[in-house]
Length: 512
Image 1 (cartoon, rainbow, N blue to C red):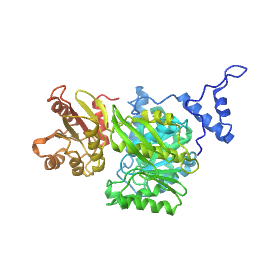
Image 2: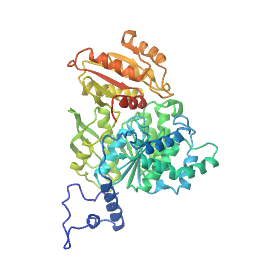
Image 3: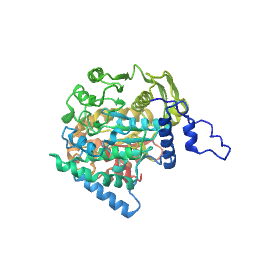
Image 4: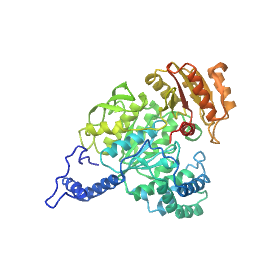
């Protein structure tokens, strides 16, 4: 797709002889070197987004204030929760394909960027979305899991859809969902219905491009009914091994299924066996590959107040002076991947040999937020939330905390799911936690606190482990431990182990 569109610093439209020019007509006329039909579509898209207004807040919505809307949303949430959960899977896209067919294939109504990998998918998706929005494209983003509200999973124009729109979308597709349920051996799952809702909402908006994160794997993931123009693969490590395989090579085999014919594959740094699988798949389907460390990457990074300052090499050249308000080397690499994905979407590196507008790139990255990813939610003492739930994610978070925060003492609050490599997560955090408070979230998947404590004692020693079965008590205990050093001593608290734990802690700590 071409990137020959007006920049954010274009001069204001010149009034015509009969008064101010119509903004829509001005946008169409500015596209004189483009296909006229495409010009009208893009101008209309930008008009719709301007009417919608800029994204608000950090993208984590509170419960609806209107009691009737809240009641209706709870009804939809209850109906969705009555289906197979995200941890119960049948490795097939048969049901979602049937639903897409009766809905008229809404996922074919727009181009898409499809994202898989083990860690960094949601942050990368948010960065891609911010960049596309900055270049005047109307975006739809589908990510999972959510931090606080299920409505976070479906975003338009950089913000979660409203509760009202979420309810309306569900009700619109509900008769078709029932139709497919009656035909298939198993009912559509929670994730399959949500995926269909996202694709329908994007078509109805309409969006110029969808940014879609897989739920798990790739080949048989419900999102894989799209043919992504760009396939993004963030770093692959061991997670969901019971479903995806016990080696990074096997996991890469499942995730490579999102690479479609003639697509561009943006490949983050990978284990050698995983990279080999991805490259083989790309050859099989005639996809173009852009590799981090070869065609693009991070040239330099330095810690800055509130984040980091980057120089990135993209597919078209270098981008200097980029401020990213997120912490850690892993987020810098996510930024490089996001930039390359957007360049590939615009045809840079193949059709065009140039960079994107640097000021637009800078402003887009500077506005990125990723709730629950080393997110500071309180000071005195500082409380940080991070959704790390596997050893690779925990190691990245631990390294980033050590680099960006000068804590004299750090207390951990850990509440993981029972099906994760809990020992690996605890071992990754052991060097930076002076003490750890083990707890649980409200999910049925949460690990029993006493079982968790037994593992924690083996890793930390009994004198460094405290057990608090309730998350609110665990937070209070950790903050008390941190405050023992005094107001100016530089102690902190890191809450981690699960997205669910982070979401519930966020609410308990007053983030709405």
